Amino acid sequence: MIILGVDPGLTRCGVGVIEAGVNRRLSFMHVDVVRSDSHMPQDLRLLTVYNGLCAKLDEFIPDVVSIERVFAQDNRSTVLGTAQAAGLAMLGAAQRGIPVALHTPSESKLAITGNGRAEKIQMERMVARILGLNQLPKPADAADALAIAICHALRPAGAIQGGEREQHLTAAQRQWAQAAQQANHKSARSGRAM
Amino acid sequence: MIILGVDPGLTRCGVGVIEAGVNRRLSFMHVDVVRSDSHMPQDLRLLTVYNGLCAKLDEFIPDVVSIERVFAQDNRSTVLGTAQAAGLAMLGAAQRGIPVALHTPSESKLAITGNGRAEKIQMERMVARILGLNQLPKPADAADALAIAICHALRPAGAIQGGEREQHLTAAQRQWAQAAQQANHKSARSGRAM
Image 1: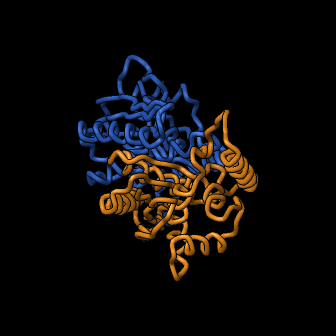
Image 2 (image 1 turned 90 degrees about the vertical axis):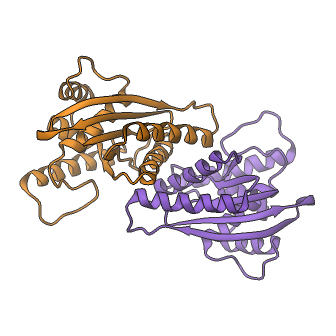
């Protein structure tokens, strides 16, 4: 199964592609950052990012697109552009009939390090180790895009996604849901999602 | 000149089309609301709104698309979906080489009523009067879309847009900029753009 991860952004939109084989064995396929010039008009920036993302979808034909969930509580001035870039990734996937999964940064940290509040450097090292890369992926947006793709592959079977609720959960699913929820509450209080 | 106004939203996205003739004489062409079901997955909702907006662009081939500017300070839970819908309208316009103008609600109120803090009912009555309509446009999203189209037609020549700054302004441009700025400061304080 090919998973294309997206770390959404208007200036830098990370794209990471991995293949998930049997026994959750993951292999690196591609990483890149789609960029748009912050001096361009916003409509042309959106077009640039959309075209860049569609080119990746057409090149790798993923089975699923895994996108980092954007939070309204995020106080960064870029939050609307980030939400728009995430929207373009969803649009491109929907136009091709590719399923979309949204994952929170806490879900990503939990799936990759076992700790929903892991530090950034710990995450990057685990991403490199899981994919057998000699170097840490650069820039951060590229590493984050690979992380969100890995997150989708390593999530507990039947894991609930951020915002969804299930009555009957296995122990692993419950741990996942609780850790993600706790980390989300923390980020909502501090006004930041990551 | 044909102006297509967009009041962005994911559940209801208002679209209003007017023609601006000589002496700023405005005539009504079309009004509609593009809808997406809030129970659908977000990627399919975005696809539905995008397809709906593109159909309007292809039907009316506007000379400019005038879109209501979205503010990150807006505390409504729908702000990210609203920003994404605005992004889709910009994308559709950019794909067709149609220029995009963003206008704040205060600019719209000032251009239509002469008061950047006008009440909603005052706005709707002026929209109906300017376009020679017997009835107030319904629902509110439809009226707002016509208002944002009219705003673009009636803005002072060379008016600066929200967020932009100019050193040398005429008296009318200065009044426009100041009124918009004041209303924006007010809406930023109250956490709402409208």
